[in-house]
Amino acid sequence: MKRAPSANQQFRERLKQGSLVLGTLIVSPSPKWPEVVSQAELDFVFIDTEHIAIDRFELSWMCQTYSALGIPPLVRIPSVDPNAATMALDGGAAGIIAPYVETHEQVQALRGAVKKRPLKGKRLQDALDGADLEPKLEQYLNQAANQTLLIVNVESTPAIDNLAEILRVPDLDGVLIGPHDLSCSLGIPEQYDHPKFIDACEQIFRQARLSKVGAGIHFWGDLKQQARFLELGANMLIHSADITLFQRALQHDLNVLRSTETQGKQASIKNLAI
Image 1: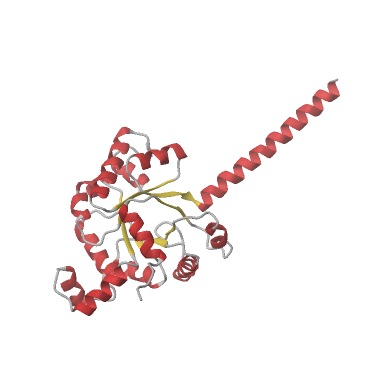
Image 2: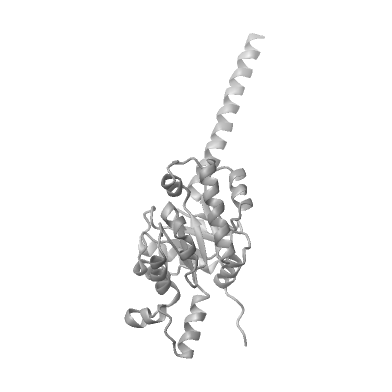
């Protein structure tokens, strides 16, 4: 009997086919958070261990919980380190996002950790070099590879220059723009509406989609600009972050309350004057 595709496999297929997938950055390890987040009907969650202090135990707990709710957790590892990728996958990550990737060789090394598990050493290198594998082993590896995602951050001009080679690495599922680092590499820090930045994003999205690889960006700006990225060809959008969305909602509500108080005082003063 053929098994139904898992949530991870379905997500991977949608990403590579160009379907729109939406997620957000999750910072909080609170036990209450997964239940709340699941109500938003996200396609995935993004957990960042490059810039956020999440230890291995917390990370595994978060991954296992979101997976149990049918929400694939994508984990950005601290550096382009195959061992770190393996550790995150062992903890329950549905896929790996590697930061600041610039070369074909870096992606190949990550491919070994993400798509050829549990091979290691010379056996792994032979497989990456294209050596024939025993049929049962090849089938086993392919089945496992369909359940995990390999996504790399493209966030520098050298990465753009090498993008064609990066996209030729087999098993790559997606490229994700890191807007802050990319804008700095382009010499226009945080100028996300600059034509140079927009052109770079469009180039990355277009090349990725032509290679049947998902094209994404993590962005926290206004919704109009996020919609523009989708118009330029992105099909994967990481919208803001839980902590940022909380801050905005809290600030909005507090401003409304302060405005209400001010209006109330003004009305009282006016009534006294009458």
